[in-house]
Length: 81
Image (tube, helix red, strand yellow):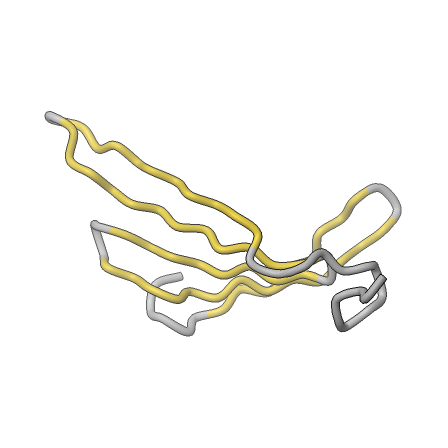
């Protein structure tokens, strides 16, 4: 996944339940950073990867946080309860 807007669909299995999801590339700077948005029936999250030169190595910094309200299985909108 590289170009902004590129998508990856998948199925998340938790015990006997399955949830469909999609992850979309939002920002891509090859060799520097990648930002993704993941959405499932359970909610959504932003995931950012930043690559930093560290001597002769590379430090990978990952920041992940929810970006939407959790959803009840089978709903298409956040619960109002």
